[in-house]
Length: 491
Ligand code: BG6
Image (cartoon, rainbow, N blue to C red):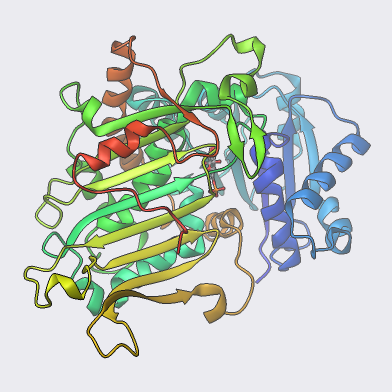
């Protein structure tokens, strides 16, 4: 049903808005989600002319949307909703007065503020929202990740935003939770008794969660070089996926229960400290290499000479352990990196070896069962079982794969994660958003790692060639446990 709201994107001409948020809002137009007078307001530091604004937005839509989507069809209605406002977010003044006056008479309409800006200005932005009387009783706020750069800054942001908005009206976004396949993981886990019976340390040997990217900096040097892979991907996306794999079934699926179960897992993560940091986490930075048959630059060349070098990590691999009854002794290996060989996001569950070999070794090697949950670009599930090679009179054992592709099984287009999540905010459904405590707990686990790195100024990220699977040290980290990384998307 069409919905009535005003949404403001602070940082509306930024990278995230142009590449992800506006295409998601455009899709809402195509899906007839808007009531007639819905407004989409984009703030910009630059004073753009109407023509510049139109060209920028339209070009980004054409680039981001699928080739068969004709933007022209819905463009006039969509463009009519858009407004570009020139605003210095952290300083108040006349611009804010004008901005605020554009909401006169719309106090009863749902109002959403989306902060797609550096976390350092979340506080001043919320203060100005309050000062210029923009926080109506219908107002909700969306906070883009990363929320802060460590535990302390996250607490300050949460406390400041919490002064002006109730927790129920704060939506901390992690777009991975909006991906269809990630939600399917919940369905898979909590509707299949077959899986439930093997979902613990009696049957599972270890878990691997990989988010590998082929892209490099993509013009985001200013943001990324202050942040790095641990804060950009591990603190949020990777830990959230870990929680979904490891959490207990909530007694009923709703936002409070789901978030409470995830929080328990975050609390049970064993700390990484100076005693074990070098054995449990590897960081890397990409150097020049060959990716998709083309020479790809080193990170420092992508950064450009203004930065004068950098020790920030573009890759991280770590071993997380959950100290609870279900997961004791089951390592969760997480890794993510830029400029890697292939773009993929995948969860691999490797089951234990057989307790006893029934067939003699000459019949073939028995490989442990594996369940692969493919999140992107392919979306599906694969289960590897052992079977007998067909048509041989002799018993020859062989792995066989049962494969299930979501696209083949369900019709219709997959909604982009941001579209789904923004519509959830409109509906006031916070299931797929992070509670304040989750964010702070994730930072409590990550911050000591950052502190160890800072304290050890001699240790630097290991170099890895663009187009590889990351630094050798990441292979060695898992190999010393007698295991190896499984290439995502390889089957
Ligand atoms: C974002 C990170 O949260 O996720 C980016 O800031 C990363 O650095 C992106 O590229 C990956 O998202 P997706 O949906 O393309 O896997």
